[in-house]
Structure formats: C-alpha cells, structure tokens
Image 1 (cartoon, helix red, strand yellow):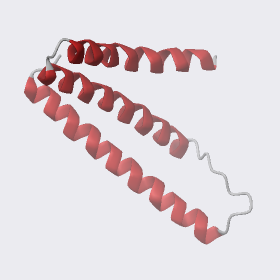
Image 2 (cartoon, one colour; image 1 turned 45 degrees about the horizontal axis):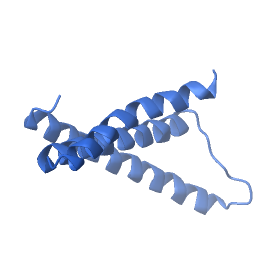
Image 3 (cartoon, one colour; image 1 turned 90 degrees about the vertical axis):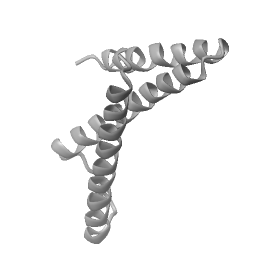
Length: 102
C-alpha cells in the first residue's frame, strides 16, 4: 500500500474542520468554532486510537535492549492509553451528536 494515501486520508479528515474553525473564529462565531474544534479533536483522537490499535493487533513492538519488565509495563501503559482515548472518542462523539452537529 502506498503510504502517501495514508497522509492524504489524514489531511482530508483534519483540514476541513480546522479551516471551518478558523473561518468561524474570524467571523466571531465562537459557539460554532468550538464545535468545529471538537470535530478536529475527535478526528485526531480517532487517528491516534486507530494507529495504536493497529500496532497492538499486528504486534508491533520495539524490544531491543529493553527488559521483560519494561516491555510488560509498556504494554500495560499502551492498553491504558487506548482505553482512555477510546473513552474520549465516545464522550466527544456523544456530545457532538447531542448538540446536533453534522
């Protein structure tokens, strides 16, 4: 798979709501700008969550020169971060849906 497609997909998910947020801020529409900012944050968290999940599913680890104890701790921390980001995604997603932002 061509990695440039991944970059284009990330840019396509981040640029439109970020531009909308900037335009809305420039026009003084704070409430709408905050909602657009939440969509940007939601997209960033979704990208981070999906990357972390893929690393876990494919077993991507860097264990060279790292003890078994450190590796085990890192795996627990990665899982915790995935759970926290997943929770944030859910909370922000529900908030956006309840606010009627499409």
